[in-house]
Length: 124
Image 1 (spheres, rainbow, N blue to C red):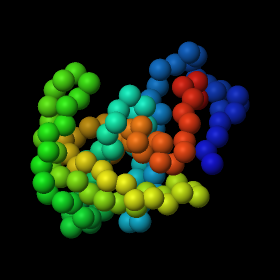
Image 2 (image 1 turned 90 degrees about the horizontal axis):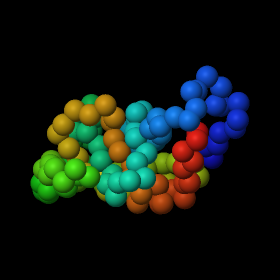
Image 3 (image 1 turned 120 degrees about the horizontal axis):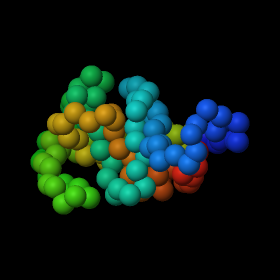
Image 4 (image 1 turned 30 degrees about the vertical axis):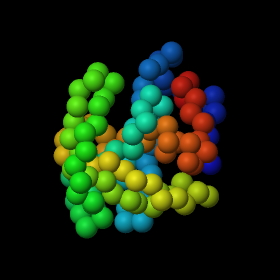
């Protein structure tokens, strides 16, 4: 379980609008800089990250279009089914793979958050 207490707010300028950034465990590695985005229905990983983990073979290379909040359309490289481990939950997730550099290694949207029974709290 990940939890926060009042002491964890020490040093933050409140109120804040910082993104919730976590690390997730997949079989090959611990992946840092994953943005938890309650406003998204997508589960996304960067192609470069997947390649660095040596998991190219897991990509089902069937490009699909993806429309963002600003209605901009991006074409994915494909999809990859990966096991996602967030103790005590170990579930299979399908991530869209994109070939674009973002500040985050991945995005975990509502479906991923829901699968691990997580509740986010903006204050922390």
